Amino acid sequence: MLRPTLLAISSLFVSISIYATPTAQSLLAASDAIRNPDQSFGLTNTLIEYRDGKQTDTSTLAIYARADSQSGQFRNLIRFVSPQRDAGKLLLKNGNDLWFYDPASKASVRISPQQRLLGQAANGDVVTVNLALDYDASLAGEEDIQDGERQKRASYLLNLKAKNNEVTYHRIEYWIDRSNNRPIKAKFYSSSDRLLKTAYYRHFQKQLGQDRPTETVIIDGLDPKWVTVMRNSDLAFRDVPESWLQRDYLPRFNPEQAK
Image 1 (cartoon, one colour):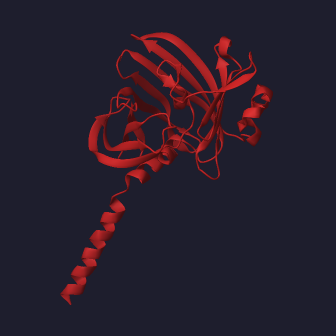
Image 2: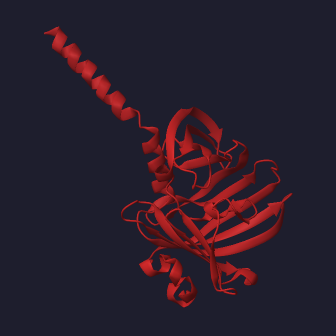
Image 3: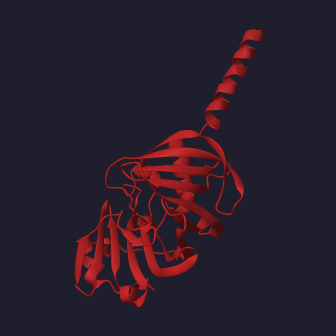
């Protein structure tokens, strides 16, 4: 009579253990779902660059993101709103291809996601990306760390390895809040394993049905006094037509269509 009972208890512990240990890839996917909605949306992204605590530059972008039904990854059209010298320029992410369009030359050129956009923000930092689709994740441990609001958080530390050479970063160290899967902090590395930048995700607010980070603070890997803040606002579900995401359509894109 005793042995079946022990067997049942043992099976229960095994079952609990399985459900209590999420995989690194599932943690990353859950964190992606907090950063990004699961349907097309738009937002305003304001980039502010600081050196030694003083603001040195700023730029405003209108971002339109559409989830690809087959890959699950986002495709993006990004419109430069300000400063005036950049107004009307466009950035298109279609698959792994990134195109820059300048209305002055009426030409589009392929660019790198690693190329700097403003301050410490690269082109690849402003496009909408589900990391779980571009990186293989492994669990490196559990740590108590300080978040972007200077609060102590119990976290999972994930090591992310790029699945191909076309993504923005070769390797990422990624901290996720153990209690709610929120992204807390990330360290981004080059192919030579040099630390490029550190990012903190903060100012979580209810946006599009979920508490999401509305601000990312990016600190240079060599100079901690060189800081760029990316601030998201005006998030809204919206239609992003397929035509907007075609390179050939860039010269015909009319900002009035996006209002």
